[in-house]
Image (cartoon, rainbow, N blue to C red; front, side):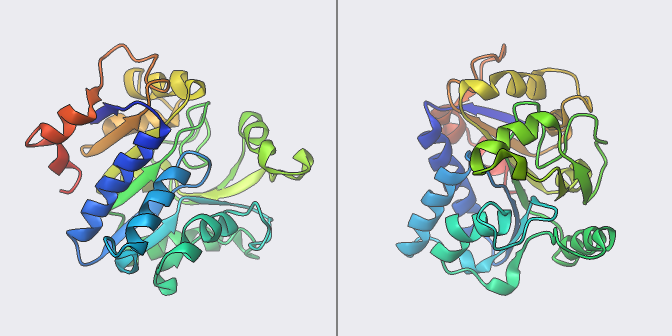
Length: 263
């Protein structure tokens, strides 16, 4: 695992986009798992800019969204389907047949989860899963207490997550209480992981995930078990770490570090 500290969210976004763009450019086809929320917005802006200037071909990417609310119409402004269209898919030239989001409105949610897991396998598995981290240590919608070998499934959201997400809804009572999420086991099966975090509010969760025990109390701690993971933090998100992270310059100058993500 490589932990990299940069100055601010803008630098987190730029480095994440740089590494993803490099991987996409070096492979004919790539399979990505992508997140929602505030953290990846800057990265998406950077990727769109690269695509619009012709420096990046996003049409070769197959994308699986990490999660989706249950019971929220896909055209609702706060559905993750809408989020991805608004911030990424409608702003660059993707192949629409390669874009996948869990169906939170399926009549049979169990079957929908199994189908989603199956589609990931049919695509050849995930190459890179890009992750944020919740203030309570969740990744995707895997809340504290979930199994570290879990697969795609329906989960109940914690009160903390519902509260954190309420700011996006006009009526806080409208925040769904359930979601479909990739499981920690599904995420861990990705060939590489990239976790992004910024802001002081994530510092405690980041420290628990990276330097605490691997435990279901902090699902993000499972990243410690992955053989090919990079974590990109701004100064505030890294402020509770006891072990000094790499600087961007150290990471990019090391002859081995930049390549490990692309095994």
